Length: 73
Image (tube, rainbow, N blue to C red; front, side, top):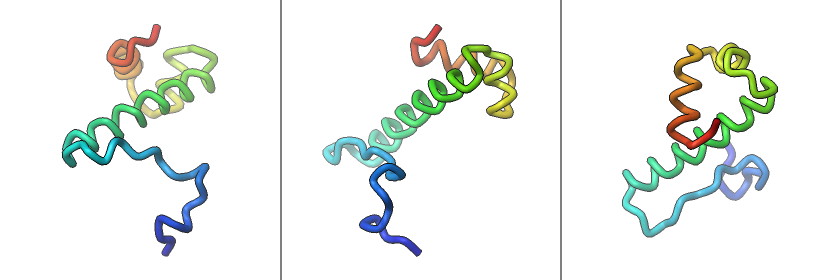
């Protein structure tokens, strides 16, 4: 198995601030992941909500809620 020193930089996830408690750090990382995933998903679907939902394997309403939560239109 790879240790963290062997993970290529472009594949490593950005780490949240080390001063945060574990729960807050995990929430910050999840929020960052979800936002980036959503932006990439919408780009791949050319901004089409239904297409993005198909690519993600979720309901269109799930994508709409995620967009609202992250301030995307």
